[in-house]
Image (tube, rainbow, N blue to C red; front, side, top):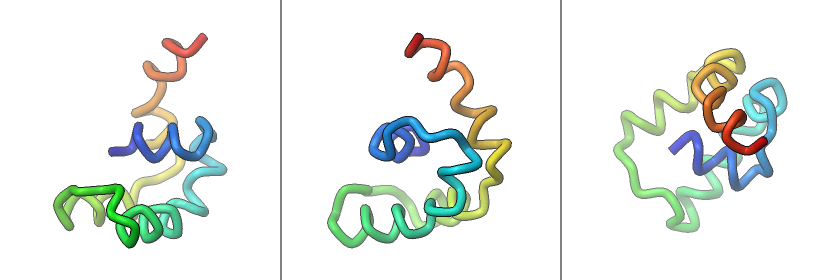
Length: 64
């Protein structure tokens, strides 16, 4: 789910993605683009910028 949001937001770094993450999640949920458990959404809402970057590290390398 994090990867999907990251791709939608044009591969932003964690520092830029974190401040807008709640708004993006609300928008995606309201428009029916995310179908995940409420717990998964809650976990993503509380993720830190450094955790975002750490979890997406492998994905960033594969884009190069």
